[in-house]
Image 1: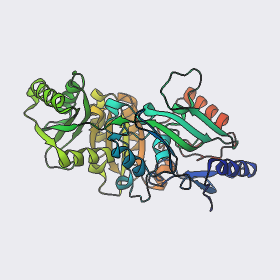
Image 2: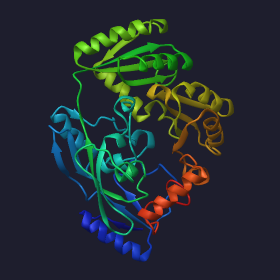
Image 3: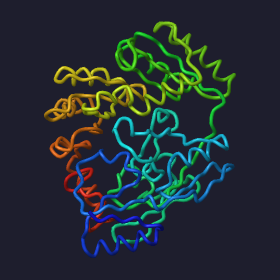
Length: 395
């Protein structure tokens, strides 16, 4: 298979124009850590961003960072940490869950809208993404957005590219707003709650004025013998101490929580962020389901009634990580039926190629939404060059 590795945006544009003339279909590749997500590749060549590396702008006072798409994510995070700053949305590292190697890249964070536990407080990656530069399917270099948040009229290309999984264009540079690292990070952990009571506790805490930055529930057997319901609080030390006390009083009907800080707290939220409680055994299929938080227990119960499954909740129950056996349809019929009944959408994150080729990987779109999606694809990538069929068979 032919492989391209441009060293600049101009070179990438030249390659795309040349490929477009031959109607050669391209798989866009960053670090390759999420290559197993989506439908199996339907391409003849790869176009890698690894040659597009380097931080192009960092203004700590303005809390803005820009980097070329192939820049290692860890390099950006290390620079931010030196100045006491961070990416607000806590991007996931997929390598353990996917059994992949390689290096997560900055551009892939934007392309996949990669967002972790702090999303409930700070928003998703797309909410912090304020600028993109990309090459469209005609080989044109497009710049959208800039260094500040602002309202837009018409089509917002910055938000459109976030979560498009490279189907609309090759990102060459991205710009994010950043936030300060908090002085103190503390987690309350309630033990032994079942799913319904855990979601009730998380909902009460999230509905309070005490500002959680993490809200998760791991049932018994999901990393520990006893169920754990975790609530993270961050900020200035005095503020954290006050909020912990008030949350403990508010939630006293759910028991007395353990206070977890330091490395133990960091390890807990890293595991939740990266899906580690379900990473083993490696031959299971993994689903990522978004729903209304209060619907999560009923949705998982509906799946479990049809198919053996394990799961845990993030985002107060709004995000369900669910593992099923990979045989047959990997639980697709049960998951889709439960989502249709209880609301939400589901993505098959990990499964064998044969399963990903046979069942919808991303949530099936209604006819009107599919028309919009195909129209956007035709507008930005008229030749269908980029990641053909990765999200949907016809796109």
